[in-house]
Image (cartoon, rainbow, N blue to C red; front, side, top):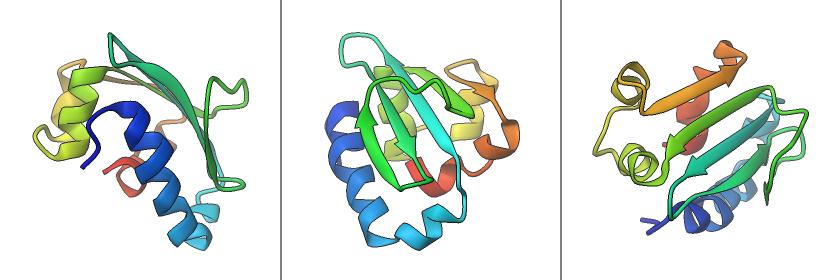
Length: 107
C-alpha cells in the first residue's frame, strides 16, 4: 500500500498501467487528480497512452479533487468512494460517465 498520493500515482498506478495497457486504452480518456493539503500534488493519468505524469493537463476530461488524507482513505478501502463523493470529500468535475470508471483506475 502506498503511504502518500505521490507514491500511489507514480509507483502503484504507473505499474497498473504497464501491466494492463490494453484495458486502460479502451477507456481512452485523460484524468487529472488534484490532491490538496500537506501530502498533496497534481497528477495526470492519461489513458490514451497510457501513462502517469505529475502536473495538470488542460485536456483532462475528468478532474478529481480531494484532500490528501481523504484520498488515501478512499484508495485504501477505508472509505467507500461513493460515500466520499456524496459527503463532498471527493469532488468530480467534467465527464461524469468517466468518473464512473474511476474504480478501474484508483481503487
